[in-house]
Amino acid sequence: MKPTVVVLAAGLGTRMKSVLAKALHPVAGRPLIHHVLNAVSGIEPEKIILVLGHQADKVRSAVGEYRPEIVLQTEQLGTGHAVQQAAAALSSGAGPVLVLCADTPLITSTTLQDVLDLHQKSRAAVTLITAMVDNPFGYGRVVRGKSGVTRVVEEKDATAAQKKIQEVNAGIYCFERKFLLSTISALGRSNAQGEYYLPDTIELANKKKLRVSAILCKDPNEVMGVNSRYDLSRAEEILCRRINRRWMLEGVTLLGPDAVFIGDEVRLGHDVMIYPNVRIEGRTRIGNGCVIYPGTRIVDSVIGDNVVVKDCSVIEESEIATLAIIGPFAHLRPKSVIGSRAKIGNFVEVKKSTIGEGSKANHLAYIGDATVGQDVNIGAGVIVCNYDGYGKYATVIEDNVFVGSDSQLVAPVKIGRGALIAAGSTITRDVPGDALAISRVPQESREGFASRRRKMKEKKAV
Ligand code: UD1
Ligand code: CA
Image (cartoon, rainbow, N blue to C red; front, side):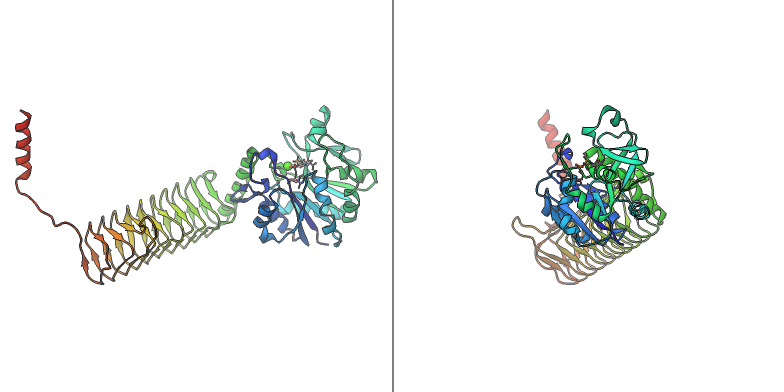
């Protein structure tokens, strides 16, 4: 029978010392809680019940894609109390109930399936996941008797001897549904924190002479709970390594993988080569054969095949077609669309503009709110003046235009097909196709002026 899953995420996460609910802190590029929900989705549950409290609306809107049923816990009186709030939502089904906390992002579907299988095979009332850890501080300790786990003791309730136990409770349990529903209302709160503890169900199962099973997770990292920013950094490190390893096995070359960040939602083609100190974030897609040089950050962008992004470029919410070359030191701001074989070079900033196939802006340019056709050459130092202090205006540069270096195109303005803009021009009116536009003070050369001036200065100095 398919399990129902309950995920507890009502707590604020006081130890995070943050205004943001713990479940929403980003790890490997997505909210902490997504990692737990991804692992849960892997076992195809009948439904997911999510217990929310602190910042319930924010958490709810961050998890929509998983379609959970939301239950509110208005007062956070402990993990047992949190599950009590889900009792009504659990009353209809019949399969086992898997309960997990939103703060164990490293758990895998495989381990969740293992706990379900053992639970069903052993016909237990409750099956928990435990792990042996070097530093058990903060975790509930697993107390074992002759016939297995007898109870879990929280850090704050543990005796000095119990604190030495290195087997800890992962906070992940599989319950026989009827047992859970009858026991959850019987929990007390006479403990150091005055809370209803979910792990107390284990002691209650033993009292009723029901079976308690436990599975020792081989990789203690998997059950690591994130309670502080330090824990968050460790989880990030482990998740990023897993993601990078997966991409390397899929045919991506990572040079110095520990210094490469690839967000969990990123997708890469084969034969992509990524140098150190690169961050690829959000829902970025990168095609086959791309090379991303050091120091680059790419966010929510779509990059075609065989694109080269040279060192220290920033690419945000943009699209780049095949064989384009970006950078070094280029900045593509949101809604930039770069055509095939186009080149956006050194210190060039592009904002909300389309650059046609084969067009080039190789040095020191600003292109904002512009539509640039094919095979256009934008010379060094060209500025599209798209803003007059009040509004933004559009610029159109048609196919095969040559914009000479150090020109300014004052928007709104249109440069017709094949036109030539002379270097150093300030263009304020539309330029017809095939025309030469030149707007600069005519040059004057005064012969012999320099030596006359030198003599004058030298005379004065005497
Ligand atoms: C809990 C376990 C502990 C275990 C550890 C594993 C209890 C009493 N202790 O401790 O045995 O070793 O997890 O990581 O269960 N939550 C609510 N409502 C509440 C309280 C908590 O929804 O009223 C949620 C939190 O948002 C969090 C989860 O339950 O996602 C665990 O709460 P937390 O306070 O982190 O428990 P721990 O002290 O870590
Ligand atoms: Ca915790």
